[in-house]
Image (cartoon, rainbow, N blue to C red; front, side, top):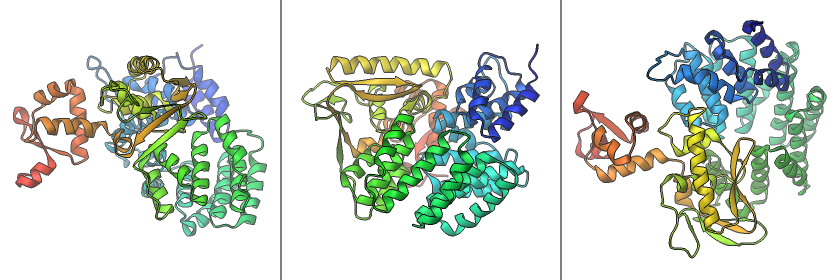
Length: 497
């Protein structure tokens, strides 16, 4: 019997709103091998990322948004937006950001929301606020869509301590979510209200809202109840119980809720001005905004120029990640090549495993993520890194778990990281452009650039577009006479446009 997709997707959307994400996910998983009619592809993609099943959305929408040259298809703005949202959820943040940048929010208002999600994924709450305000200024939003936007804006206000803006917005959301009987939203708003009062040290009010949140969310037995527990522990810690966060940290690791683990360490490090934990957080977090915030909040603290991450009980052998060498060895990985870049990236986050799409995006930012081909290419590099680690006799491996990859110690080993390399490790486009600058300081054409970097024409074009967007290079001339020059050279010679 053929599937009535319209009725099915309507039912699944209702389940998500009612907080029955697990039920929705199970239903969507049954569609993994089903051919989805194109009129329903965007909605399937949207539901997929909402219940943390982005691989389904990528499989359905990739042939539409990234069609083969022999089978051209023009994707709609909505299809592209939902594909970008799936990329965001999968961890391919840079590619998602580029897609969203070229879409029109006037045609699809959700693009403002997804751009805000992209900012929050990097802990950039300040950057998300104007995007969410643009989204909420759209008149086409349904009551539920507006409420979702307002919840995200309230979360950003609380995170940035904009209490005078957060408090009235949360009060308004409490009323609307209660009237609409949206239990999932109501529970989240109660949690945010509690967090808002915690940051203002109004403990009694915070406790009251946490009690209400627990009552609303007790039927769900999901991650939201864990957040109630988190905020209670934070209150205990802020009130003087220095051990209040210990059991919460352990539970966060057991639940694999990595950002909560990172946040607990942040709260403790800042409160105690623990320079060792601050350095661990700084070097163990790949998000620039997060690292900058540590230096702003802890005034006078400056991160060390290098850091040794001791994995195990003792020091063990030292792996100089930045050089790709074991301490005392002359030979090592060739700096800048794929295996070395993979090691540097894996060593840049001490908390969260890297999803497949994230690693592919970081290793090959000039290439589009493909749900089948990209993971295969990544696995080949992983095999080479694992073999190298074994050859070196290091008690270190790359562990794959639930679709994520992380460095795993099998004994005592220390990873030595250097600030300059650590900060630049995620900026491969800049590295490639630096190589071009070194070879062709006065400019270059596409043919010589492709040959110098070993890139195919499409990959090179994407690299050049990123260089232009970031202001590193400029296009000069047209057609066969097109050349690319470095912006600082243009400024120096007075030949810019």
